Image (cartoon, rainbow over all chains, first blue to last red):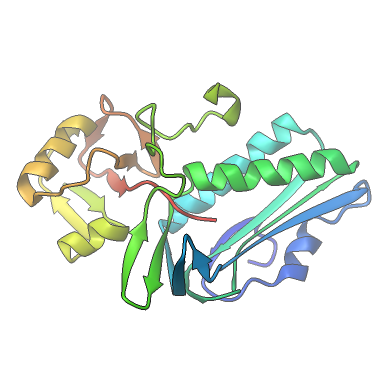
Length: 159
Length: 77
């Protein structure tokens, strides 16, 4: 299990282990992104979050994002872990590590990964506030799937 | 038989995490209409359907033995 590059887990994410998964002799850069649970969103105080995933498909979609990255930025290596279950404020929800020979590709690919996660990976977040809770479906407050389905072919086709 | 997996608010609306329907084959679009009528699900229009862990479109056909998942707009990250 240790060397799975794309994982949905329930335990806390071990950051250094994920970095090790992308460490290589030809890498000159490793970028990491850590998504954490924020306390305040639009003036509302979050008490805790609950994440749910369709695990086998979510891991498949994470792997697909990795493939997209490797075709856009050759010679990168990607590892992504997303945690599910109950997460408290400041807990790590998602960790993305990308290594590449030069830093530019590692930065760009890492940002691409988180944007794609928010588009195609079947994971849902439930906000728990002091006065209620709600499954969050549309974080950008625009129509979720303007083309009728998530853009599974790649971000370039947006425009 | 077709197995249908439910997540997030759909799971809570129906009070269960899966449904089983006795059908040989049905298109994704027809299945959505059927579910809307049978279970009075309100927010199915934005819900995507996956067949055997791959996103599907309304015209795709689901066959007996397939595992279908109803995928509300995602909010990971």
